[in-house]
Image (cartoon, rainbow, N blue to C red):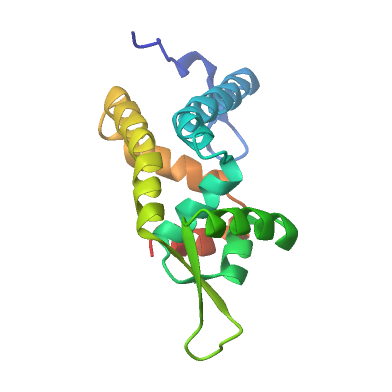
Length: 172
């Protein structure tokens, strides 16, 4: 059942910008929907991760290594914005379980580059599939032309000084 979404009454003229603005209550509703959407978006992979004794940190590492084969530990730290200690613990578990392998860099042997193993590629695909289906369903539900607007909103949530860097990550 499609919930009735109508922000028309909450949209007001914004005299300062010459455009339109959304009321505070409508924005709070969107924030709450974002929380619930994220909860359900992560729920399917969370169930799969339980079989491995992994959590969301493991999922994020598998995802970004899978999308960026050969990513360095330093680059991964920059993307995830977690401490070296946190990454080291998660990475050790993923390496020990045969999900990720580390290789030395060609030019700098001290540089550790990360790759998914065949088991890691399989896990990554299994984790992505329900999320792909959920997002595709949501876009279809909203109308196919909603995807660019959704993309603009998500980019708008990212700190402005980070948007170019994030775009390079999501569009390698």
